[in-house]
Length: 537
Image (cartoon, rainbow, N blue to C red; front, top):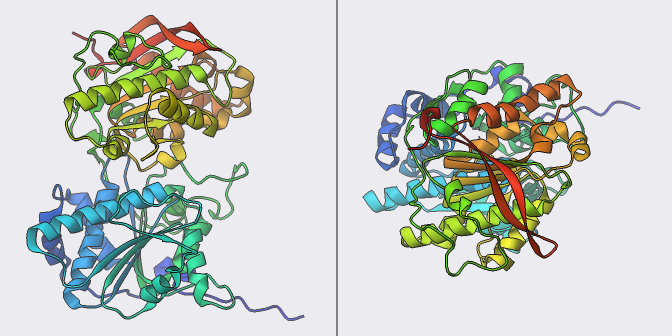
């Protein structure tokens, strides 16, 4: 039987295997003029490296943007997309932009940044000459976007076919659509009787957090490009990579790596490198700067502190009976100590941990009470999307914390408390990050040590915080000695961070918690880092 010839779909095939052979893409006028048009609507003018990516995205068929956490990758992507919008709106020709990533949170971040720029432009000089449609495609089981400016498009809805027709049509409007590769691919299948997930939709494809996107997933995105479409990949291959259902030791021709590393290493595409950290203060950024980024990671606002005053001296009168209280909570939230580690000696918790869940919930409630009293007009949505995030590795602990926040702390599920895994938190940022490491059983630690002790995982967790980071972690995890030498080197990151980096404070404290309905206490070690490693006044 004759071998069936392989069908090559362009430009996806060339992007994957011979990106250097790609024909010239779209033709643009002077991109300096485009940048000048965009600049007034940016929060801050791009630095030299950020501006370089802007120009590359117009001149190159494929561009890479590398940057540690907080260096403005998403901001640069949004500004670049606005440049494309300006060009096409002025020309009166259709523009289709695809936004991809490994999860909806990262996709929504880009969509929201683009909308913010469009809104700022509209407020300044009026609406664009053609309509702009910003849409996020999702599965039926996934949550819709929080912003009502992003059109919610369930893939199986009655409106989906009309949306497909708009994407492939010649209407001169601008459509920006975000979605996972699965949902966009299945949307494309609507126009193919043979169920091929291909479509010539996108003039520009932007994939954020590309260090988390598998090569195969990126290839699925590439199948949706126009023949002369451009691609921008933004990521940091020193943060978390793709999640696999099996352990990878060696990749096969790079195909099991993330798309960012694949393009950089396999095809030698040089990324634009960002090194200025606009997110965090120096106390939070100094550790990853030294441990992960060879001291090439500079805090732009080193003095940034949590906008909070500790102006009470005891338990609030309306504190719920279902949550423990300690005056130590006020100390833990003190903005003068931007990094806090709380360790303890319990050794029985695995996938969920009631002690950590109660402490995290109590700190969250206290923080909300202080914010509500000191900062007027902070909505529940702003609190959960800007003020605080809770990171934990296991879904059982996520559920425990959410239940406590709703049932004990009296918070609502509209919007739901932002408690999530670090994998889904990559690309997010908050003023305050509370991290619950959960596991406190040495045997259970051994079963998942490579996962939970990953330095990349810790790098992402720590660098979600703008102003303050609080970590709860058991001694069973902190002092664990893996038998695998590679895992042992990884585990050292956590131990050195807690015991050496956070050495400005080292006190023993007792924290209360409810155990089987009775109030108990846990003996804890409180460590912290003040400015420049110094001590409190």
